[in-house]
Image 1 (cartoon, rainbow, N blue to C red):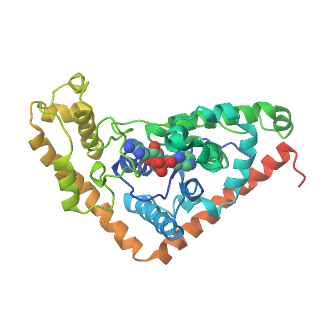
Image 2: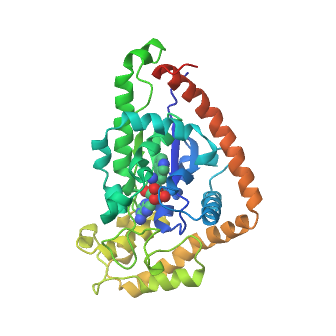
Image 3: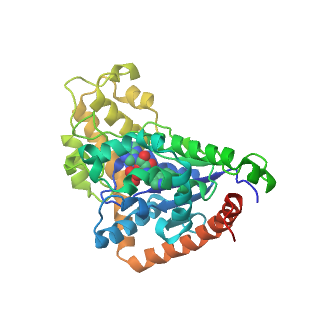
Length: 344
Ligand code: TYM
């Protein structure tokens, strides 16, 4: 069994309100990696249910993420798109990783602390164990690279810690079975570009998020042109003109955020954008940003609506993707069973 050397895995939760942060921080990068890597992109429904989901909405949101993947340019024939719960090996390996990861490691996860908030005792056990499932998602394919936004960095460090501990704990069994450099790879996070952390349009100190109450805080992939334009026009800014150098954005989180969004949407660097708009007022910049956002996101939203009109068609794609994902995961899980000492 060969260790893959360029296999990409990533996932998005079907929890509604897919937004510009998900697009620029993750999905747009997923698309680019198809040129160079073997890619597996998952709709992580098992992760979604760590907080309550209405079953009908979960089903719709799952199809919506799949539709977004395809509309943004992921090819479900050359690569793989599927939903997590159809490949049982994710959950099986997650159990094993629950027994490898330490409570102390999970206690340090800032996202759990944020999501559980003051009601920690009332959070689901799944929400606490979530990063072990995420490690299982990645390592059940022995994926080498994972493109994500900045907020997932700590979870990917934990994934490496779990892989490392497994490789050490089972070193003898792994070597006996002929694996030379450990069984799991130490997966590399891919977090780069001008939009790894897109902030709320209403508050430059908060991340753009699916769960933020105000819809004005984010641009959704399903927003129409008028809505996108209104949200950009109303986005919070400061009274100064735009600077011509990157240093001039320091201490100006809203300006920095909008410039980063512009750069990422137009495949430019922040420096390029400032060279063009340095000295301009926000009114001018926002008008161009709004046109740019509509021209890039409009066609994606329309294609999503078209695909969602045929839910059966999306389900067929997910089922086919799941079969192909399982064909990769099953032999890896068989090998894991032998390493761990499960009778087979
Ligand atoms: P999720 O569903 O919260 O977000 C999906 C992807 O979008 C990125 N993202 C952002 N990027 C930039 N700016 C933002 N404001 C922003 N908000 C979200 C996230 O970083 C992510 O890449 N735990 C993951 C899903 C997951 C996963 C995995 C990812 C499950 N298993 C295995 C990679 C590998 C999550 O909740 O993403």
